[in-house]
Each structure stands twice: as C-alpha cells, then as structure tokens.
Amino acid sequence: MTGIRRGLAALASAALLAPAASAAPAGLAATPPMGWNSWNHFADKIDDATVRAQADAMAANGMREAGYRYINIDDTWEGQRDAAGVIHPNAKFPDMKALADYVHAKGLKLGIYSSPGPKTCAGYEGSFGHEAQDARTYAAWGVDYLKYDLCSLGPSMQAAGSVEKAQAIELAAYEKMRDALRAAGRPIVYSLCQYGFDQVWRWGGSVGGNLWRTTGDITDKYPRMLQIGLSQAGLSKYAKPGNWNDPDMLEVGNGGMNAIEYRTHMSLWALLAAPLLAGNDLTRMTPETLAILTNREVVAIDQDPAGRQGDRVQVEGPLEVWAKPLAGGAKAVGLFNTSDLPAYVAVDFAKLGFKAPVRTRDVWAAKDLGKLKSYRVLAPAHGVVLLRLG
Image (tube, rainbow, N blue to C red; front, side, top):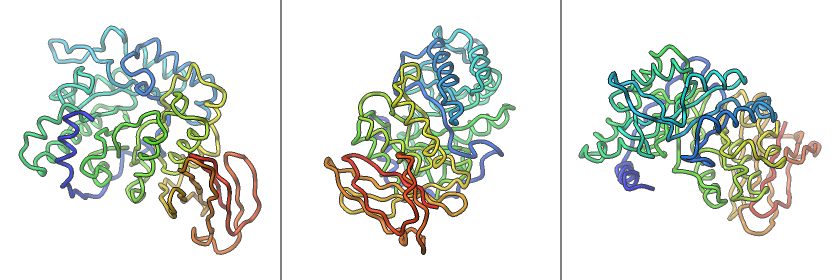
C-alpha cells in the first residue's frame, strides 16, 4: 500500500457514512460484470496488439458464450492532452476508436481506466478537471466500462483537515464523473476503485457506482486471495442488481496457486456475486484454467438473476460454510477447508432453511447426490466443495 493509501486508510478509520445505495441506470450491470482486465498479468506491458489478442481468445475459446463480455484496459494507456484539453492515448494505443470497433465486432465490450486525481496510480494523466471532457471522449471512442481509481486524489483528501471534509472531496469526485458519464450519451458501467475506504459499500451506489472495490489489491497467492474473499462477510445486504461489492479481479491461471486453490477462488467469488474479471493471459491458458473460468454451473451461481450476494453461515476454526440464495428458492453452498491438511466439513441443511430433504448437487464434480438433509465431506487442503441445493 502506498503512503497515500495509508494516509487515506487512517482518515477512513473514523468513517461512519451510511447513505442508502441508489438504483443504477436501467440495464447496467444487472448481474455482476464478467470479462477480463489487463493489470494482474500484463501491468504496464499492455498495448493495442495484446488487447486485440485477448479479445480474439475470448471470442474463440468459449468464454464469450460462458458470459464474459468486457475487455478492460487498465492503467498506462494514457498519453497527453492537446491544447483543447482532450486526452489522447499514448503510442501503445494508436487508435482507441478502432480498437473499440475491433472488440465490438467480436461481440464484446471495451473498458478503460482513469482516476479522479491529476495522475493515475502509475503516474499517467488522470481526469481531474476534465471529467466531462473525458467522459465524452470515452463515449466517442465506444467505451463501455470505466474503472475509476482514487490514487492521486489522496493528497487533497489528506490536506482537507478532517475526515468529514476528506469524505466530501471523495464523494464529490465520484459524483462528478457519474454525472459526466450519464451526460455523455453512452451506457458506461462505472467501477469505483478506492480499496474499501470509508465503508464504500454503504454509499457506492449513491454516487453512481455499479460496483465498488471493497478491499486492497489482490495478489496471486492463496493467503491473500482467501483474506480478501472471507473479508466480505457481512456485506451481502449492500449488493443488488446494478450495485455490486467488488473484491478485486480473478487471479485464476496466473500460476501462483494450484488448481484446488483456484477452484476455491472461483467458488468464493461466485458465492459473493462478485464481478468475474479474469486477470490471466487468455491466449496461453491451460485447458484446466479454461475449465475453471467457464464452468457453467459455477458461473450461473455468480450470475443468478435474483442478484443476491452470499454470506458466511458457519465457521469452526479453519472450516467455513457460506451460502448464497438463488432464484426460485434454491441455494448455493460452499464448504471451505482453509487448513493445510484435508478435513471433514459438515452442514445441516435445516440451518440453511430447508425443512425437508433437498435435492443436492456437487457442482465441481457435476454429480447429483440425491435428496439430503445434511452433508459431510472430506475437503482437500485449501479446497472447497460447492453444492447447489434445490
């Protein structure tokens, strides 16, 4: 975490904001956004050719049919502003409109990145003072998604002198881009990236966010992924269609975890109704990675039309049970073993609201288990057994 982020975290420690989330513009992010983002794998090594290659792969490998739609360019695309203040991409992206057209021709959507501060996290041109101008530019290019990263607004917030004034600066900045996007004439999903400061889940929707980061950055390591995922306990009441808690992008396939841990990652994010933004190189995936990302039953849990986020229902040491309500009265249930050795995890379905035996399916095994009143299973170390009940 940077010094700016540490300072913001200190300010946020006293935050008690709690306005209700407002409805998103009709049709935007009715289910958690699915797609790909460049940062986790490529960071600043992203360019036009790489983005086109990712779009080609998504359109050809079954991800598009599984529900993945967004091809999102993260930081380092930005160039300079011209004399009129219009932002231009740098030499890595010679024609952003042509790139958007290419992505759209694949049946996909294009996302982009900016900051409400003067600079982005990587030190490129931010949107401060140019919000309406940038929103119009994005719309003219054909952009469908904006990730808006707090970053260099931090010094202004730290200098505000009080938590209340800092929060006012933050909210005003996000509202300003919200209004700019809505006036730009193109539906653009609005993703707030501010690391969960100030209990953003309480107010992210009220400033126009379709999704908001609830945590610091993820890394491709099991302990960090687990910490982020389990920290979402208690946030389910703040999620609904058009407004989603975002525990950061997926690391599936980047190599820092094994297949069992990646299935845990994917299962937990699906139970959380989290945005599913792949962060690997889609052109170099193993069949195993592709199978994890495109498992239709797991994706269906994430994308369930009821739009309910799951939550923790049981914990005993390293063993946890999480449940997510699904449309029609069904539930998805994750039995997690976070320990370093295999362990039995058990759950009584009556505690989940089922008064009679209920049809039970092991999702990853694609196996029907019959009608059951409870279930006890040996879960692998760092593993999960994902069930669908009903």
